[in-house]
Length: 308
Ligand SMILES: [Zn+2]
Image (cartoon, rainbow, N blue to C red):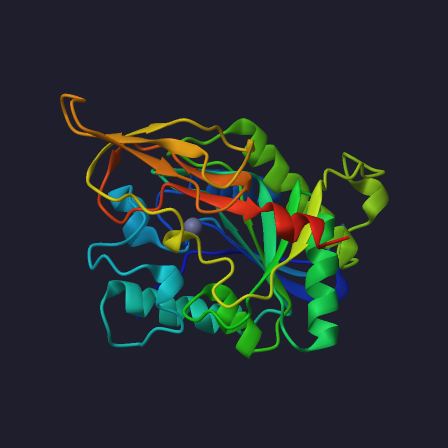
């Protein structure tokens, strides 16, 4: 059995049990630092309910400094796992058990070593109205520029376990590229505290940024199957060196160049054009690409405009 290292803060007042996890992918550092800071800020006398903090859910991957542990299984595709499998399967099993103990759940991510993600908070567009409403409230309270509802049917994720257990849950993304951006850490600390205030686990008036100024720029519901699956968009046609022509957050048109993939001497290059027009919300930042790697994810203009 894998032990998930966690810190528990038991409030002096009644309230729900919130679980916050980071490091489901071992190369996502802002969440780890932010979750430790949340643990330093929240005190039992101020807390209504119980807070479980897991800075590094996938310790085997963190120790390697990579997205996955040595079995190369993606923990966010392996849940609910199994008790007697490989290291990632066992971690998924233990993490899934922990998720099922919570009343609410926040899972923090970044683009990892290879990608950068425009700050966003996401949730599954589940059919259950009450759960959907709770997730929307949490996502809005988290207060990042993009609030993104996506296909609820994707399996293997931490949020798939929460969905099956009827636990309202959200995830967030903030930059990445193997860094630990201070703005990302700050935004994640604020986001977690804001959600706790929304769930009445903390007094909103006690928060450092009260009253809250909304940072939300877009709210998008994307009901299409596989929406939110970032690894299948705008893939590299070949292995080589990626030279991006766009920046994160930029608005582009379908057919615009995302960048070139070239060979070592630069004598051969293929220009990769965007499959969709919209905002670049994920961009590859690790220059070496393999054939089939995602280079970018575009939040499509139609989706933005079809949403209020
Ligand atoms: Zn991740």
